[in-house]
Structure formats: C-alpha cells, structure tokens
Image 1 (cartoon, rainbow, N blue to C red):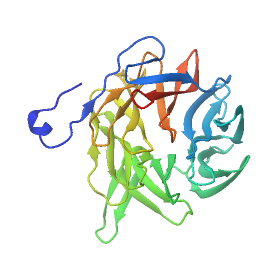
Image 2: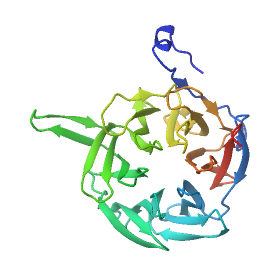
Image 3: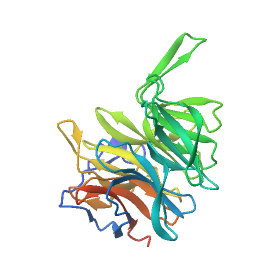
Image 4: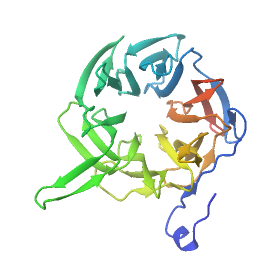
Length: 315
C-alpha cells in the first residue's frame, strides 16, 4: 500500500492504493470466508443484483459471444430454475418494495433505453430512450426510496444560460426521476451506487489516467472525497446495506488494459482497506445481499458465473 506524505495524512483519512496479489484461479484471502459458486449455467452469467429482501438474484446471461444478453432471475429462497424476464437487456437493478427490475434494454435496432420490468416478463419503458449519441446512459442504480435512478453517461455539457457558459463532464453522472419528469447532471464520474440512506453516491472517476473511487453527496454538489489511489484501476463499487463498507474490484493495468481483477472493501472515509479475493481470474461487479453476503461474477473454468462470499469476522 502506498503511504501518503505526512502533510496529507494529517488532513484526513488516507487514500488507499490497491495491488492484488497474483495466484492461480479464484481464491479467498484471509479477509473473506465461505466462498461458493451460485450459478452453473452453460452461458456466461454476469452482473449480479440482489432483491432488496434477499429473495432473488438477477443477472445478465449471454449464451455465446456475440449473442444479445438477457436478464434472468433466480429464487434464492427456494432455488429451482432461473427464468428469463427481459430479452436484449443487461445491467439489472432492483426497485424497492414489490421487486420490479430496472435494466438497460437493447432493441434490435441497437437503440437502448432504460426499462422497468414487472412480474414474469412484462417490460415497460419508464424513462426516455438513452441510445442517442448525445444521451447514452447505462449502469442504472435505483435510490433506496425508489424516486431516482443514478446512471452513467458518456458525456454531458451542462450550460448555465444566464452566464452563457457551462461545464463538460466526461464521463458524467446523472440522476433521472423514475417517472421521467426530470434529469439532474451530478458531475464527473461513472458506475454509481447509493448509500443505504440515499444521501450519498459512491462512483468511479478518472485520475491521471486511472480509475479510482470517490464518494459525494447525491444532490448538493459538495466536493467529492477520493477513496483510492495508485497504478491500478478501481471500479464497480457497491455500498453495503449497513452503510459501513464499499466493495469494489481492482485490476492492474498492462498495455492500457486492466486484467485479473480482484475484490476489495473499504470504508466510506477511505480507511480499512481489505482484499477479499486473489488469483488470475476476473472477480468483479460486487452486489450485497441484505444479510451481508457479497455476490460477484468471476470467470473460472472458461465461463463467467455468479459467486458469493462473506467478510471474515461478519459470519
């Protein structure tokens, strides 16, 4: 871990620098326990999302490279066979309450839109199409109260008309009202995740050519706190249900490409870094269950599947 100059260390919580150790396959460190594989389909199964009550797991499934993805739901309470709920869709995120899903849907004409899925497969668009090059959005994250969907946008140019000037964010974070009545540009960043109280967002922002984690107030425009630093890319944060921990993945970068990602956790103030997995697979896209179990996808044995583990000491 990189140490900070004393002057910086005295100002507040230290930034953390990540550097996964390399071992074969997917293994736990001494910071984790109860590693287990959850899905075992023939397809690649990625991007897990856990229902707010812990009853179901949603994830993206792709049968073969080049095939369109679809979203499947598997009951965690009763097991059984997963069912497809949204064709040509990816990046599932659960609504609060009765259990609707929000996902990004890709139509046959490659236009994308954020949709809400209900019941056993009915899907209805509730937000504007996002496939237009000036409004390309993804990575939806529903706020705990169900009012907002935080999204990543390729870029946004926000104008202050009375001053005839503006700011450009690339990438950009935005908040979309679920009922489609407004959109707020939050600032530079991507891959948002909400704190359990709905007041803060953790997200990824580029710094000197590398991706690192930040935390900021969701709506008031306060300065963002940088949580990680270093030569590796830190990405895909997920805020724990009790608000104490943010899980993410970190990968070394070689020739401009991040490879061999592993899971870490850190506190929202930048302290308490722990590495959870190690190996030469790609373990990423963490998602918390309400019971503190951490789900993620990993490519072991030639395919991506959904796995889970617990933080040691929180069994």
